[in-house]
Amino acid sequence: MNVHDSERLAGLLEEAGYTAASGDQTPDLMVLNTCAVRENADNKLYGNLGHLLPKKKAHPGMQIAVGGCLAQKDKGEIVKRAPWVDVVFGTHNIGSLPTLLERARHNDEAQVEILEALEVFPSSLPARRDSAYSGWVSISVGCNNTCTFCIVPSLRGKEKDRRPGEVLAEVQALVDEGVLEVTLLGQNVNSYGVEFGDRLAFGKLLRATGGIDGLERVRFTSPHPKDFTDDVIAAMAETPNVCHQLHMPLQSGSDRVLKAMRRSYRSERYLGIIEKVRAAMPDAALTTDIIVGFPGETEEDFQGTLDVVRQARFMGAFTFQYSKRPGTPAAEMDAQVPKQVVQERYDRLVALQEEISWELNKELVGKTLEVLVSTGEGRKDADTRRMSGRARDGRLVHFTPGDANPRPGDVVEATVTYGAPHHLVADGPLVSHRRTRAGDNSEAGLRPKTNGISLGLPGFGAPPVMATSEEGCAVR
Ligand code: SF4
Image 1 (cartoon, rainbow, N blue to C red):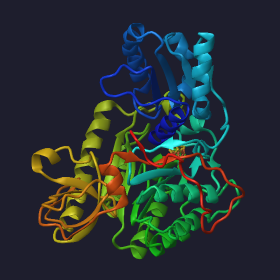
Image 2: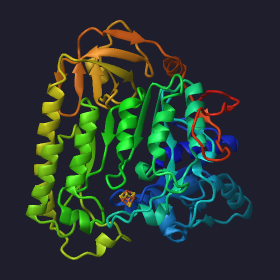
Image 3: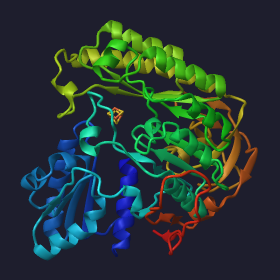
C-alpha cells in the first residue's frame, strides 16, 4: 500500500513540475513516506530526520515533507521534535502535498495537515509507476476490522471501496501502456463491495479483469479468511488471467489466540478454504503471514500454529515475532511472551516452513514454467549469469538466458533444474522467449504514468475507454 502511495506522490509531484533528482544531486525536496506497521518505525523516522538536518543546512531552500501512517499518528509532534521539517501530511490527504509545500515556502512556516477521513480516493490522483510490466491498482483503502495487534484501522480509517468501473479503467490504462500484470490491492479484498452493498463484488471484479485484452496476469492482496466466499475461488479458477496464487494471512493456528487477536475465523474455517482452493486449483500456490509470540500464546497454542502449517503446506510464509505497536490493544495486554521464548518458537516455525517450501519446490524439477522476467529480484544474477522472474504462481525463478537476451517485461518459458526453499533454478536452454511491449518499454527506460481515474456510478462490464497520460510513457 505504501509503495503504491509513493508512486502516487511521484506522479503528483511530477504534475506539479518537480523532476526526479539524479543519484549524486542534492534534491530540493525530500519526501519520507512512513509506515507505522514496521517495528521501530518511530526511531527510524526521527533518526533519518536527524541525518537530513545537515543536508538541509548546506542546501538553502531544501524542503522536507513527512507523510504516511507515522505522520498520521504523530501529527504536530513531528515538527516539535524536528522543527526543520516543512510539511507533515497524513494518509487521507496525500493529494495536498504540492499545495502544502507551496504554502510552507510562501509563509516560511511548517505546514501540518492531517485529515481524519479520506478526502478523495487516492487513485483519483496521478501516479508515476515503478515498473513497465507490473502495476498496483487499489480497490479499497482502510479496514473495518479491529485486529488487536494492528495499527492500520486507526491510521487508515474505515474501509472505502473504489467503484468497479474506476478500478477496471485504471487496469485498462495500465494495459494500454504495455503493463502485463496487475495486483489488486486492499487491506481486505474479500469485503470489497461492503460500501455499495454487493457482497460478491470482488469475485465479479476478478471475472471482469478477464475481459481486458492484453492483461496476462491478475493477482490480489490481501484476502481475509473471515470474509472469503466460494465465488472468489470459482472466479479465480474460471478466469484464465487470474493467477493461481493466494496469500491468505493465518496469523495463528490457535483458536484461542485468534480470538485474542480479534480475528473472527477459526483454524478449521481457514483450512476449509484451503481445501476448496486446492480442489478447484490443484496447482495453487499458497502463502501466508504468521505472528509468533502474541501475548498469552502458550506452547500448546504454538503447536496449533505448527499443525495448521503442516496441513496447509504453504509455498512460503512471512513469519513475524510479535512486538508491541504503541496504540494497539495488544500492546496493553498482560502475559507478553519473553523474547527468548518467542525466538525459540520462531526458529522452529521457520525450520518447519523451510522444509515444506523446499519439498514443494523440489517437486517442480523438470516442469516448464512461464516466467515474467523482472528486474532486481536476483541478487546474485551478475555472478551466476542468470536472470530472474516470477512464475504465474508467484514463485521466484532464476534462469539462464542463453543467447535469447530477454528484457525485464518479456515472457520466457524455462524448465526447472533445481528447487531451493525460496526459489527455483532453471539452467537449461529456454523453451521459448516472447518479446513484449513491456520489454520494449523496460529496455527504453520508460515507465507508465496513470492519470487520476474517477468515473460515474458503480458497475461491472467492459471498462470505458479512458485517456491515458498525454505524455504516454516518460523517461525517468
Ligand atoms: S484485517 Fe486486521 S490486520 Fe488486516 S488491516 Fe484490518 S485490522 Fe489490520
